[in-house]
Image 1 (cartoon, rainbow, N blue to C red):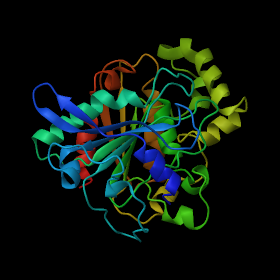
Image 2: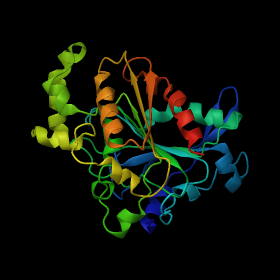
Image 3: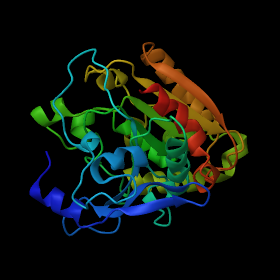
Length: 323
């Protein structure tokens, strides 16, 4: 539900132009929009919209009014079973940082957002927009309730521990997002979940780290304890590769067809071993044979994909397939 406070917070931030050195205006950006009243700098969201989406509200070169809200992010009634969502696709991004690094923020999506906006402005790539959320750090967030918008198709994307959070959001999604009853039933879950250099089995890593990353065992134990407490049973229940039950079926329960998952991992990653991807791939293959599961070989060290904006190369085909 969109409240008067939500609208006031949204309107408090103006749209600013996103320009490319070669192609000029390519989109619009709202930076650090608060999503709770009297919140902190870690309770904000950045939103980028493609030029074509904004032009319908304000003309091709004028910024949308601050109060303008893309229809795709407004709540809509549940779709019912076997319905395909329509419209320009969106991506919602959860950054990494081991649940504790304040230097990695929603702004880390900016290079990727620029690349996707530029592609949308100069080709037929049908992008709607992107949202990148800041969140409070350890202990891990129990609610990222602003995600899951209106009737357009959307992908939930996470990097590192953000990939953990992305998968957690479809594990008993109503309870995890703090929704109950009718609210949970109306939640529009993502059409795709994309994990990028993700952490999916904390307990397994701490107990049996691969030789290539064994020196990080203490670091993993420290941030796992900071995020989830000292009980390793809690770590296992919170991580998608070790959580019990057929939790993937909860993701399918909203009735929208064509759910897909993309797991991207670099073998050059010095912080997260490739075994994390392999463990989740095995679990998804066993628990969700109906799922369209794709594995993508990424390149570079752990943070390079967002530092250089090369996440765009992974996200572009995912978003195109949602149309």
